[in-house]
Every structure is written in C-alpha cells, then in structure tokens.
Length: 366
Image 1 (cartoon, one colour):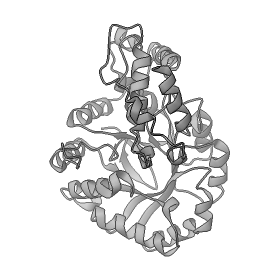
Image 2 (image 1 turned 135 degrees about the vertical axis):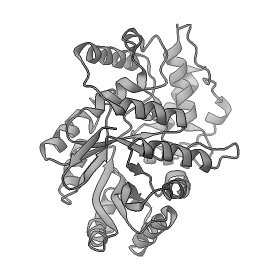
Image 3 (image 1 turned 180 degrees about the vertical axis):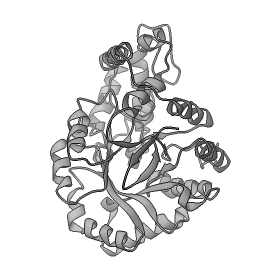
Image 4 (image 1 turned 30 degrees about the vertical axis):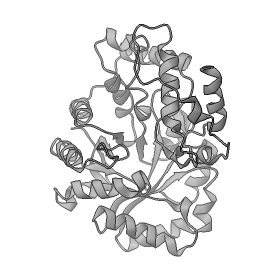
C-alpha cells in the first residue's frame, strides 16, 4: 500500500475506504458479513482510512462500518464522519447529531470530521448555527482530531469557506472527467497553493468511469489497462492529496483497488493521451453528469432518479455499438409522476436540474 505522510496526520493510506455504497441483501439491508470481510481485507492490505457520514443509508452505513472496525484496535485506523448541519433546526441538535454518529460507530472520537456537502444553498447554516466554533470546542474536548469540510460547489464559495476557518483539510470531488467543473482543477490548485491537504471523493465519478462501454475506452484497452486503474492512477499520484476515497460495494472491487494502490506508478505520456481521448469520448456521448450518490432519493413521488439517469447514459453511450450494456430500461410512467417540487435538485451535489432532465429523458425515449 502506498501512503501519504503529512506531518500533522501521520501515515495514511493513499486508498481510503468510502462507506456510501456498502453491499446490500435482498431485503435492502446492508450485508454485514460481506462488509466485515471487505473491511478486513482492506485493513490487512494496508488501508487505514475509513469514511462514512450521518446521512449515508439513514445511519446504516455508520452502524455497519463501526461494527466492522471493531475487529481492529481503535488507534490503528483513521475514522472520518460528517455533520449534517443542513438538517439542523436548533443549536442543541448539533450535539445530538454528533453523539448519534459516535454511538452508531461505537467510538469515542473521530479522527477526521467534516461539515458535510457544503453548497451555496446551505452554507449560511455554518454561520447561523456557529458550526465552526462548535466543532473547535469538540477538538478541545478530544472528540475531533482534525476538522474539515466537503463540497461540490463553485470556487467562489470555496474561497469564502476557506476564510471561515483554518481548516485542517478539505474534501473535494476530482477526477479526470471533472477538471473543467468546479472546484475542478482551479479549486485543486488553490488548495495546493494554500498548503491545505486534500481528500478526494468520487475519483471514479460514482462508477461512471468504471462502467464504460468498450468503444469509449478503446484507448485503455490498447494499452492493456483497466478503467479503474487509469482513473485512480490519474488522481492518486497528484501532489497535496491525503487519500483517495473509493466507495466499494463488493469484495472484488476492494481487491482490484488494493492491487492498483500496492505499487502505483506515474502515468506516462502515452497513458495521459489515452485518458484525454477517453474523456473526450465520454463527453461526446453522456447525457447527464450523475454520479449515483442518491442524495436525490428524497423524491416524495418515489422516482428512481439516479437509476433513470444511469439508464439514459447507458443507452446514449452504447448507441451504434454492438457492445450493449443491460439495464437501460426507462419507466416512463414513473418519471411522469414528477411534480417539479425541486427537492431533488436542492440536494444534488452535481447541481443538476433534475426536473428538467427528467423531461428530457421522456423526450429522448419518445
């Protein structure tokens, strides 16, 4: 396993285990036995950074990860969690949410703690509920070791957030498809300039950069490289990065990622050109930049938004190709239930106009 070594953090695995997409059983509950094996496999191969959040799976992720981590000494790994400050109604709830996360995870402190998914619509809540000073008190109490924030928003907002506190770290979405987005390359370089350590989320864009048809990834195939390897190596070698989070759903995915990070080599010129060509191929065919994070699952009508967008992209990327990927069925009756309330768009980290895109789906499929 390759490690970063920031003096204030210590030795942290370059591969971080993201707990957003744990495997589930047929009844929809998390498969704890599989999770235990996946976490154990990652740990024994050198992974020591594990990431969850209060809202993941309605709390099921925290519980499952906490249970799995009981296999190891508490001081042998770094545990990251996140505060859902955007759900606060009173200042008293700050402690309630925090303690709930500690209890679910079965720990007495968090190594890394983040203000979760800060964006232009909820950022004022950090001020209104005095979140920074609250969190700094938790640091003094020893319940938080390092304080940071995560965001999927504009660089203007990033600059404003950096003025709120001397953050120990910042977590951003960054991958080879999102360099021109925000924060993107500009945000990455600003954090690097300020010497603020970065944690990377969505390095494979929620699996988008993994589940690509062969005609789009032909440049990788010609080099004998896999889609995950190219995406993870692109981000993993960059300066200023503490760890790269991968939301693993199967033991096979965990093993594949571990193999990539065991002896990661810098990309050569030929590989960089291949990544640029694949990026251009994706942009030319993709319909919507959904990562499948499912924050939009708040839909009061029960529309499977991320599933619909995945099917749309799958269909679009495979047009004219003999390599058909299954799972591109569209339930038009379900989509027509949309009342355009906007709750989904308000929660979307990618800032997608979801009601508008659902209309486009209906038009696309006739």
